[in-house]
Structure formats: C-alpha cells, structure tokens
Length: 345
View: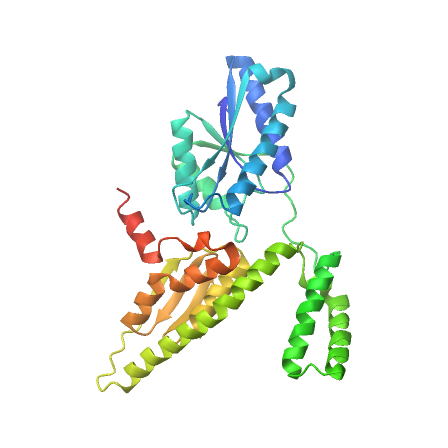
C-alpha cells in the first residue's frame, strides 16, 4: 500500500472488525511518514432515499457506521490527531445492482475526497447472495484506484446444515405446520386439532434447526404476513386478467402472439423476495421466469401486453410491499429505471 488516504467499503461481516483495525493501522503507518492520513468508511446502500423517511437498510447502515467509528477511534489511540476518520453512505441516489454500479459510486466518492486506495473486507458483500467482491475489486482497479484486500481470515461461507434453534423459531415452525395441517384437513374438529398439534410438534422438534437458520423477528413476521394476505388477492386478480388476455390471443383468428425473451434487474433482495417475485411472474399467464441470477431476471413473454405489464413493475412493487413495506413499493418501474440509466441527465 502506497497511499495514506484510504477508502473502506463496509457491510455486515464476520471479518469487518479486523478489517477496520487493519485499515487504521495502515493509515497510522503512512501518517508517521507523511504527517497526515485519512480513512473513510462508506456503506453502499442499494435503495434510494425516499420522502417517506429512512428504510430499514438506512437505519442498519447508520448503526453499522456508528459501530465502525467507535472501533476506529479505539484503534487510533494516541494517533487520533494525525489520522482523520470519516463515515458516510454512498449510492443514496442510485439503484445499485451489479458490481459495476457499486464500483461507480465508490470510485466517484474516492475521487471527490482525494482517496488513493480502496481496502476491501474479505467478507464484504452488501447483496448477501452471490459473492460480489472479486468482480467489484476488478472494476475499482480498472477505474484507476489502488486496491488492497485486508489480510484477515475469511469467514466460513458455508453454514452448518443443523444449527441451534431458538424458542421463537420453534414456535414459528410449529404455527406454520399446524395451520398447514388444518388447511389440508379442511376441518377444525377436536380430532383434527389434536392430531394437527401432535404433527406440528413433531415437525417443529425435528426441523427447527434445519428449516430456520436465522432469528425470527415476531413483529416483522406478523407485518409481512398481514401484507401477504393483501398480496394474495392482488396476485389472483392479476392472474385472472392475464388469463383473459391470453385467451383473447389464443381465440383471435390472427393469433397475435409475439414471443420474446427479456431481461431486467429487479429491486428485490435475498432469496425469499426474489423467489416470490419469480414464482409470481411464472404463475401469471403470458410470462415465464426462465432464469434468475441474484436479482437479474430472464423471462419469456408471450405477447407485447405481457411485456408491458412485466416492465410496468406492478408485481415487483407488490412483492416489495410484502417484504419491505408500503414506502418501499413507491419506486420507478424497471422500464423507468432503464430510461434513467440510459439518460442520466
């Protein structure tokens, strides 16, 4: 490393604490030679700022940056006067999807603040699914910044198949299993209630450490379930409309079909929202999800109308409503986002 002004992108990871210590150590070392140094810790957010107020991601980002600032001050010790520590958010006015998007906002921030080198945490992955770091490092290096990866031990990427569960996880799995049993039984007679409770208990005991590997937030889960109850009738209505459109095309004498494979980047994150959107697209006649890579969707469309509906973003907004809330549903459609990217002015 040759620079004393360092950029460190951050996200939640098991190696972040050691990365902060390494970056501060490097800044102190160069500050002893040049007299001054700086470390800027930035969190790339994948959602735009909205008028409705901060989203959960923004709140988590600020909490993480506050924690990082405390760590950095601890590591600086007596060298606090020679090294400046800054924290901030980047990408608040963009939709970040690809490594190129993340690299662009990071490089722009580095140039605006005269930063010379980017130090990456080996566990840095704000997307949380497909590893982002290797292509991101390559993009940043190609843009002209010196790139270094903190020499800290990588966290193990593969988790245990069976993990220790919590009471909340047990109760959640029991409740879902019990309701599903009653749904299949089609009855709430005492016998069905008793056998359902026994079956749900067996399922919860056997699978709670396998099926649920993360903590359950009861409040968030209840809210999402309530929004899901609103989403299901909406999806059924969209399916009915699409069925009528496809029936018209099939019965039309000219058979006006116009099949085409299209691609777009959806504004949903993590496996469950992505899976929900992909299945919703497939359930809607006229569209079929062919492939999903992270948030990049490849969809077969049967007609022009089905493509227009897909790029109109109605299903995407509805899925965002279920998982992220009402404010998160108010975003530009895929076609509007593509227009903004093509014409940034």
